[in-house]
Image (cartoon, rainbow, N blue to C red; front, side, top):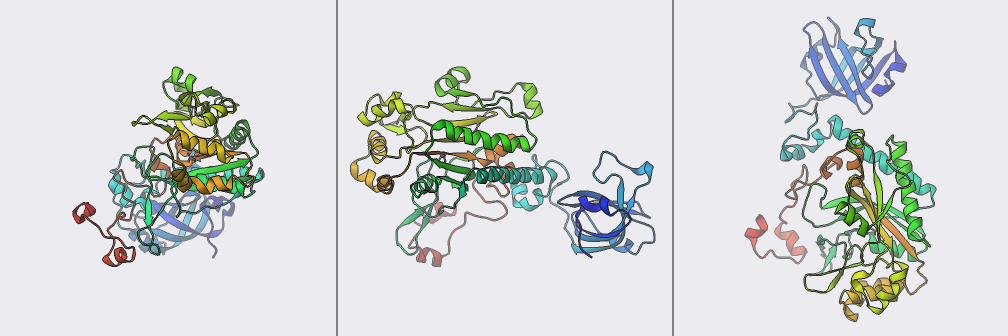
Length: 467
Ligand code: ASP
């Protein structure tokens, strides 16, 4: 018999069917045993009637067993109907239950919100935590959000392109994670903090509109809304001005979240300068919702623009505030080229804020070598350093690279807003612990002597290494 999903049962009233899933709840009433069975499509009640051949197995079964159940779909008697429940008007009269795999008693209760359970226990058994209703919903909201964004981008002539994970450092203001090279003794790859340089090189490559659901890997201090890994909807477009990128993103976000049933507070998204945001809200991330709108889960998006390009370093030099590859606003290009009024130069950076979080950020880029060179000069790079760091970009820009700009939208931050979660780990399938340990598995781990030898590495202080 072919397995059907639980949400298809009602169509088969009166027929014998096969479902497969988990035992959500078992209620043994002595003569009869009731179950709620669960699969990806929902829940249904099943009953083993007195004297049924399935009784022996039914007595043995416990919560979270994986089972295959054959039975007849019956209309429930009027008095037992539960109008407020999925499948509340039918039940499965169980003829046969096959235990596909039993389950030990679970280390924690997954029938309720698991957020208060000890982090270590939850993440050690993340696969069980993910069975809970809230976690299933969060991960599915994430999947739907990405799917809808992807569809929007395909409709708008974007090409999805993957870029390397083993690469050179791209500065995004964090430390790099590095990978030792076996073939090149003493040399290291960096994992990408973002695909920034590659996506710009794809503009040099003539793709015009690129996107990628990109993993960004940054060694930074772990906080509630930060992890070592996060995902971005990473986009780049050629022949565009700021407004065109912002409009495209706004169109994508609006059509995606509205199709998912959410309400946006204000359209088009309000735009505010960094200076005004700081004066008004004391921060460049702010929450525009009233307490009532918070209750209702309304999404309040806004753009922040006109950020300063540079800020002072502790040593008294200059560094970029957001992205060294950005272009100043057109009125300030001249200052950059002459190295004047550095602190006053504004960049074409645009940040998308939603409900108090930065949910994305991007800019129009310097597409001419002399502009990018001027930026690195302000930051104190010598000609040689500059060649070493970004020589490949400067070279690409000498071959008709079009004007371009893009954005990276933080998937987790966006899903946190959609689901009302305040922790990044609630919207990632397998997040890290606060101490930087992987869920379920036990990385980071020491390497074997053999691996160290192959990688031309030796660990200097084994005691420190063990910690
Ligand atoms: N690379 C930037 C980031 O990761 C996004 C962008 O400017 O497109 O934040």
